Image: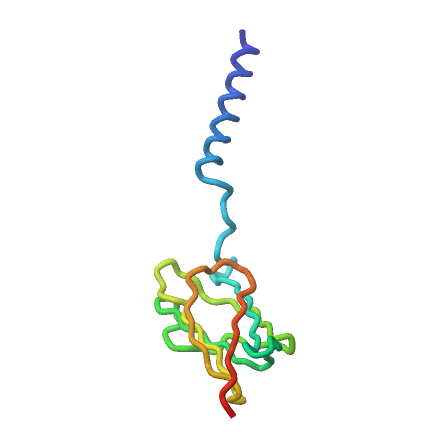
Length: 130
């Protein structure tokens, strides 16, 4: 009789866990790291030919997180990529991002990201007419 009870408890617990996972899914990893920042990666490319853009400045502003004004958070490498960490706060607006070419060959781009998962975000920039 005791063996039957233990077996029934095990089956009940397993089925409860299965129902919980079926309803809520597998938990997503946290958006922020141990420093309270959200890591993000960007790849900047030319819209015309897809060439990587080196030296593009990335600025960020996130109201409610300490970044009240635009601050430089990174610059792209020779592959056109940059990894930045932005402060994260559930109640913040943004983050608002600017991508600026110091040489002036490309049109500056403004954007905000609603999805803050850590993944490579590809940004295409237009050339200014010569």
